[in-house]
Length: 536
Image (cartoon, rainbow, N blue to C red; front, side, top):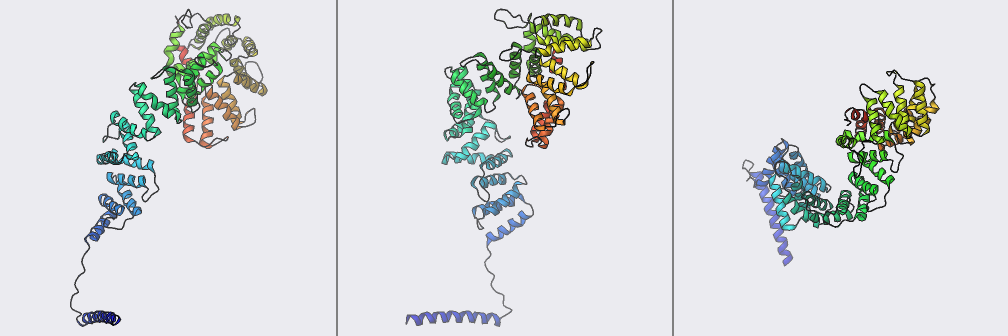
């Protein structure tokens, strides 16, 4: 009976449907009742039309619909497309919405760095509401991402929307540091350090240093070395400074070099100190440049050489340390004072200034240099040779010049070897050109630490003149010259081209090429220094 009832019901339904169809056919002029209109779909169509015409507000709104699934089927890819189009027109909220997609990986691979970049761009363009939202998020759920974002914008400022605020920065940075953010830990330490709150900065630098942050290793070493917020412990300081120095932190190189130079808390080692000073000097640290010059002047751990010392000291003077040079030049070398007046170095500098003057006084220079030569100071012989090489001087004498150069060369003076190489290269001053002697003398000068000789050897190998062309070898000489404080313009241009074109086994690096090209020097730095000194 139940089965019959069901069948009857179905039959009646089918009949009703048939009858309705028949009625439609029977009354063709009668209008059908319109279907209900979906208001949401109309709005979406209007927004889509406006968005396609480039309306950024419509594009952003449409993006929010697709992102949330409001009024349309949720689709993150489409949402990001509309956000991106609006963002290209500088729609600040769309830029922030793109940031949200990157933050959460919606429609794109998750990328926190890009998210932060977009959020900051939006805030910088005036989206203060975003800052407020993120602050509320931190209160509600302690969002680590938002903590770091807020710490960043208050630490650095963000356009005119958010001014730099150390108090708020510190608040959020400490929260981020508590979440083990290394960057935040370093920034907390930096803010305390800038405020000279060393005891507060110390644990943060220590924490960051133990995690391998190079700058924090240096700063923690500095604190231990100088007793900032803690007891002095120079042995432990040296250990942290060494770690930072190996990561190319110039100030760490300099500070560790000082400890090794003085034997303060560590075993004294002039050679290691020199190596560290040279590395820091290569990064244009003027104090390190100065210190290398002092070591060559004093002959500590290296063979004493006044010319190389002057080369370094003059370079330091050009970097802001001329007053130091002038002060020491006229300060007596008595008791606890370490001035240069009435010393051999003073006489050397004075003689050099007479030779480098716009109106050279070779006669007086020869008198002073002769006194130094009698003390077996080899470079004095070299300078005497230079005096006699100038044909504008009435007492110029090629034989005396060569005799002095050769005497100094036998005493391993690198400057003399360098000058002899030049003579044999040109075949001048009464001698025949001799390529073997050119290479021999340049190599001796290079081994003695004279950077211009390293440049010349590099140039020879770069172009394959006198020696077989070997760009890799040329690069090695150029790099050694840089480490020894001088790179000629030709050498700098050649080395720059290696980085520009990827020659000699180095990778292409346009930025490095530009930096190297800037290092090239046309003249010795000492000429400018010597002509500006006052002797008392």
